[in-house]
Amino acid sequence: MDDAVLSRRSLIVTGAVGLAVPAVGAAVALTGSAARAGATRRVTIYAEALPGGLFGYGLEPGKATVPGPILEMYEGDTLEITLVNTTNQRLSIHPHGVDYSTESDGSPFNDSFNDPGETRTYVWRSREMFAAAGRRFMPGSAGYWHYHDHAMGTDHGTGGVAKGLYGALIVRRRGDILPDKQFTVVFHDMSINNRTAPNTPMFEANLGQRVEWLAIGHGNLFHTFHLHAHRWVDNRTGMLESISDPSPTIDNKDLNPGSSFGFQVLAGEGVGPGAWMYHCHVQNHSDGGMAGIFLVRNADGSMPPGAEDAIHRFQGHMHTTSTGDDHGGHGA
Image (cartoon, rainbow, N blue to C red; front, side):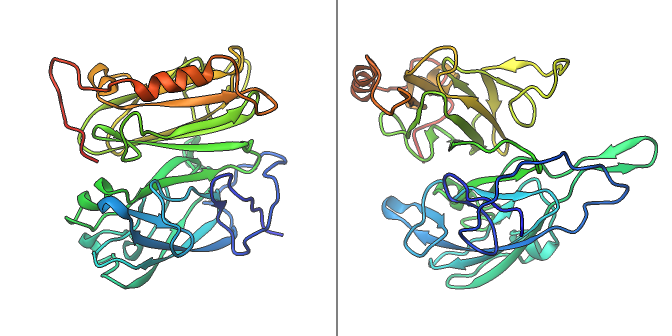
């Protein structure tokens, strides 16, 4: 049976939807060659026009979202994406962090894109860490990556990215801990997931649930991602790997155009339930609407004291760019 699991937000991509096997077991042994042969998983993604001039990717017709679905694979696996362009725009899908040929680059530079109404297949490959000459190791593909359009508006997909054609891509090592909840946060210019406060996403989890955050940067501005009351380790997973792991513990990290990172936390660990804020820590960006709510409910799912009042205050707060050097407007 293939290693495959359903993602909490969409799915870990598999050739047979509905197959569910936890990613647990012994660590993968290092080998002297590039990744051993893995599973090939196939998924169809539909690029669609959305209300408000936006565009999105979806796993079913009529189900496109901004951001698009979280795509997951294990190191050593291959992902075949059949992209169906239902729009009247040229567009594509381009990944970060994985291997692909020029035909699957997703850029007009390599004549790799979908014309309006066209269907095209893109192939992404991943590999495990392997031993190389000179007592070195070549890195595998595991990480929190992302994908996006690279063809709408310009040859770099500037129009498509600005209008919502982006999503998270996770490559896991076998044995990685799987989360209970997954949240994708995309900082693009002065917006979060193409929205500004008080209309930014409110993410919810119950006390103690394992939550995986995937943070992605796009656009033209520099940002920092801050999560109130929670902290994580600045490495691949956000968790210490041993008692001697030197990775620093942080609660704020740069999130700049083209960058991405992810981490896992236990909701409300050490601080309890409540309405906690996430936001860009560039002050005039948070003042201008780059803020949202992480609602940690009680373990039974009920609303904790004070949380509803905090949410109402957030929704009624006037978010305006502060005085000083404003580096951008409120465009999507």
